[in-house]
Each structure stands twice: as C-alpha cells, then as structure tokens.
Image (cartoon, rainbow, N blue to C red; front, side):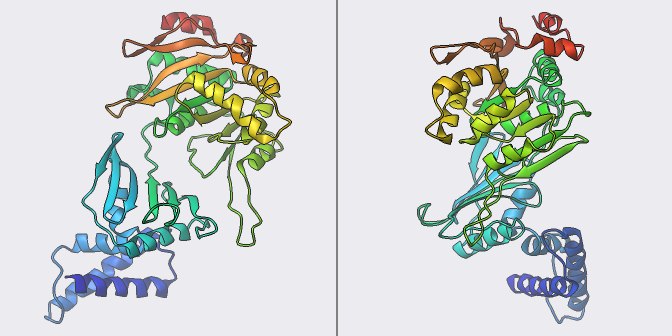
Length: 409
C-alpha cells in the first residue's frame, strides 16, 4: 500500500505542477485533482494492473495532506479540539486540548520535521537559518508558527503551532464560556465604548488575545482602528481597521520593521484607536506616549497579576534608552492606563478573568494606586469597591457607569 500511496502522491504532484497551482492556497483545486487521480487509479485496478484502494476518501485525504497540507501533522491541525501542536523531537509530538498537554503516538523522522518547517515557511515570506535561528510566522489558515533551530534547541529543532481557534468573538460569548460574568462583560463593553485605555494581562495561553479581540469588537463602528502585532493574530469585525505586522531583516541585513516602528507609524494614520498585540520591550514607551496624548488604546502583556502588569509596563520603557527614568515613566503609566484585565488558566483548563483593576491616576513613591472593580472571591468574579477613572468619558457616550456597577452589586 505504501507503494500505491507513493505513486499516487507523485502523480498528484505532477498534476499540480502542470496546472500551476499553489498547493497551500488552492487546497480545493488540489483536492479535486486528488479525487481525479484516485478515481483513475480505481479504474485501472479493475483490469488487475494495479492494486485497488480500500478507502478512496481516506486516500484522497492522505494525498491532500501530503501535497497541500502538512503531512502527518494535518490530522492534528484539522482536529477542532486541538489548540496547539508542538514538536520537541521527531518522536515526541505533543498537543494541547482544553488547556491540558498530551503526548501523541505520532512518530516523525528528522527529515520530515525539516520538510514540514520548510513547507510552512514557504508561504509566509519569513526565513530561518544559522544567522536567524528563531522565526515567528502566520500560516495561511491563521495558525501561528514558532521555530527554534537545532543548535539553539538541544538535539532537534523545536516547533510550535498555535492554532487559530475561534471560541469567542464578543464579550457576550466569553460569558457563555464562563470566562466572564454578565455584569463584568457589560462593564468592559461600556469601558471600551467610553474610550478607556485597557491593558489585558495573563500568562501564556491564558486567553489574552481572545479577550483583546472581544474588547476590540466593542469599538464603535464610526472609529478608525489601527492594530500592530509581531504576527497577525487579531480577528474582529470592524469596518475601518488597518492591521500591520513586523518584518524580519532581509539577507542583506536590512529592511527589518520592528514593533516600535509600527507604533510610531500608526500615529500618522489618523487613528481613533490603537491596538498593540503584545508589548514586550521598548515599544511600551511609544505606546505610553500615544495613550498619554489622548488616543485610546488596547494591548496585552505577559504578567502574573494586574499589579505585576503595571510594574512591567513601568519597567519596559526603560529599555528605550538611558535618558528614560522611572520618575517619568511611573506617573505616565498611572495617567495613561485606566483598566487592567487579568486572566488565568485554571487547573481544569478553563480560561477566566480573575480581576479587573482600575487605575485612578495616582502614584506615590513609584507605586501606582489601584482599585478592584471586579475581583475573584469564593471562585466567582464579584464586584469590588473600586470605580473606573474618567467618569466623564462614560457620560459623554450616554452610559451611567455608577448605575451599571450598582446593578452589578
């Protein structure tokens, strides 16, 4: 049977080259050719010249995965319950389901892993080599690819594929997933409409990007949104939205576009809102300057708590240069960030908002004051004692935030 698969694989590749198809982008056309190839093989098998195919549909799926998909990994990528796939070594392929890790029974060869990485990067315009041993890229299906080349990772190249799995596109859908309470969702939607600056924090896989997408979906349609990211991950409905991503330097060592460059460029594009996929380094300074100038924004950051998120936002701008001091940064953060929404992944694999903290704008001895608007008590997100800043912003869009929060009590 392996000989049959290899022969049909070669016939399909010849047909794809003949028709000039791009396998990764024209999957439907490749599937049509695969069906034709298998059908012709079945016809020849009636004469006894070749062995028959037991399951034609399975054979078509196998051929499409080999030519247009990602070979042995394709069934995992097609599985809606799989959130992420990673390869530690060819014989240790893991997946994440419902926030939990599982070792699969899939065994690859080193050559297969190298071929898969090369095929994935072919469609992205990004590269990986000894001079650039890391790469972040977005696959055509919206999945995020991260590769660490062998030599940096011990023994074998390390591959992560974080699937683009849409479980929630709006705050109301997060309520249905029990990630958020109805009253907290109403408050966050009102805060977005009012133009508050919101920082979303949490650990890896806590659901920060999903929350950011749901918050962005609440932005009024009459506003112009500019988003900047390392690689495209934002997905939300909006009529006036421009998305930008970073770019690697070329083989000549030029042409790199950093996240900091994109933040600066976005300010020249008449934005009503700015969204930064994730702040990691000195671009935090440019984002703070934008928010401090009256431009509403949303962003995410890795942190263990809302308090840690604020501390990190105060630290990252210091990377921008020696002339940047905490004396400038701390009060700027206090006056620029209005809310911090912190998420966690609990032991059951459920992603939940565990605190929504207001930043009233005061700082003393380099410590920013905060007030809990919602906090986790007895396993439930409950109303805290805090009030959001900029009450006038809510009133300007016709929202009585005091009444809204009183009803949450």
